[in-house]
Length: 237
Image (cartoon, rainbow, N blue to C red; front, side, top):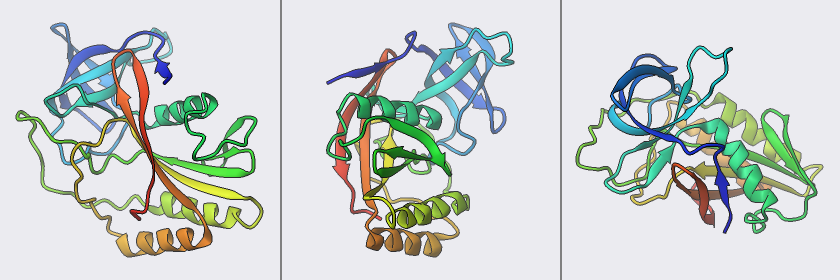
């Protein structure tokens, strides 16, 4: 099994607290600084304070913030939860090219990313990648504090993409909706419903009836790199 290796191992630190949608105060070896956080929403129902985290360093003079928070630790083991949704696209491309996702799609020469609406193309198949972070399916550690559930409504883009995937089957052989969990699922939790739950639910059913395939992959996230942990056809719509 191949591992996606980071250019340099990620740096361990602590997310002291979140300062804004895009920034957090972190501690790295006793030094406090501001880091970029790649997800603008909550990380599940977790209070973003005093969380062990992994950070990437970017020595680019054009960047205001040199560090990105790539993962947080919410359990009592080394099951890091990757939170960089952009990274998911690179991981999926890597594992497809390494033929570790052949059961999803194998007959393709190359991957065209973001052909339209953020949907990638593999041969005669369209692929939509999502990294859900509204519910984190891990058993929380003793020091993790949680917050009351907060309804979310940012589902318009997903609904639009699902309809586009279903429509693509008129001209293509296959369409795949792929959920990427940059961690190992250790405790299945009830999925937080959006304020547009009924519309989303009906769109999932419409896409499924049209022939869209639903898959999910889990990963083992480490400071050195990411390994594919499991690949499953999903019936949970």
